[in-house]
Image 1 (spheres, rainbow, N blue to C red):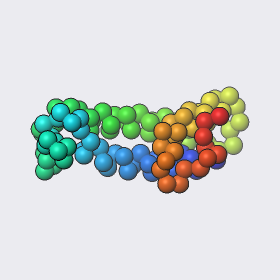
Image 2: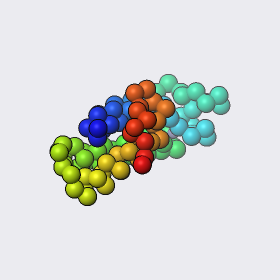
Image 3: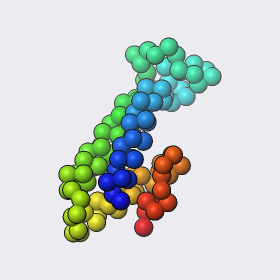
Image 4: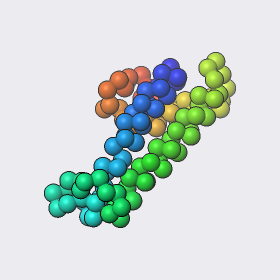
Amino acid sequence: MTHELVTWLVGVLDRIEQQAPEVHAASCPAVDSSGMLYAVSLDACSCGWPQRIRTDIAAKRNILGLVVDSGPGWHDGYTEAYRDVVRLLAAPFAAEPGYRAEWGPQ
Ligand SMILES: [Zn+2]
């Protein structure tokens, strides 16, 4: 169960990371008054949201890497704790396609 959840969550994080350059605060000079992104010139960005998103995703990937490295078949408190962590990391994305109700936090 955890391996499938990790695989699914990595896919979600990949999609979010691809969109990161397009996410800015409304007041950022990289967007116009209608909120549309100016022609991909991140040099104008002063809000830092794209980098913050990438940093957050990198941290989540590091956590997920620890889960994968523990390998299937481990049944100790450490693995159980990581299973709970993965469920909590996935919960904000429950509306994404492919999420299973059984993956919800317990
Ligand atoms: Zn910005």
